[in-house]
Amino acid sequence: GQNIDQPTEMTATEGAIVQINCTYQTSGFNGLFWYQQHAGEAPTFLSYNVLDGLEEKGRFSSFLSRSKGYSYLLLKELQMKDSASYLCAVSYSGYALNFGKGTSLLVTP
Amino acid sequence: DVKVTQSSRYLVKRTGEKVFLECVQDMDHENMFWYRQDPGLGLRLIYFSYDVKMKEKGDIPEGYSVSREKKERFSLILESASTNQTSMYLCASHLAGAYEQYFGPGTRLTVT
Image (cartoon, rainbow over all chains, first blue to last red; front, side, top):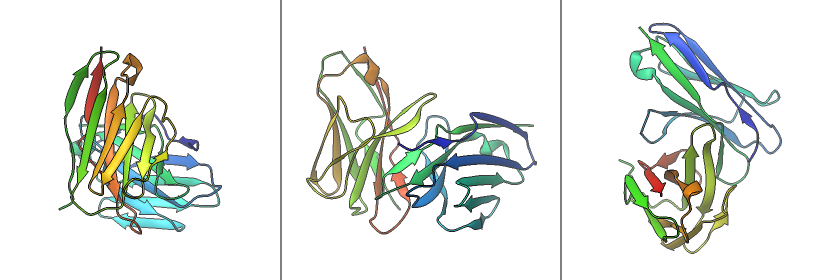
């Protein structure tokens, strides 16, 4: 698989904004995905970026810079239920995804 | 609503046993995937399939095989289970031309 890097853990306060970064190897890039995974549950799709720029979807936004091999997931107005792992995944060829190790986000009161 | 189901949520097997993990999707998706998820390692692709009877190795196929006899069903087989195959196994399916992969609830396999 390709090297996809994201922070292991982050902590943020309820109501705040948090940004989770992801870097990846740019060669053969086909698209970038963010998934949310609560403990003991399956990953659920959050966003998909294939072109540069910001995609906004409610409280969640995802940004992509293809030339820099960089993406971030922005979570606004954090809620306790946002405590979860956030997985960055990249498609390089075909439809198989290469996942980062995930960022465990803890939202505190 | 999209649905991917896996045969068991929890499974305990002994070393050397043959283990079958089943995955079924009801969305007529062409593509299906098996991942395993381990703490500190994330999700890693074991095998995937683009069509009936087609299979491709992922990043960690050793010790595993797969079967896809029908479009809706993708099976992962551990020919002789070993303790290092204790893990969470996740199946996913995907419609060709779309982008989202849909995941099943996972099977937590313990090999003793």
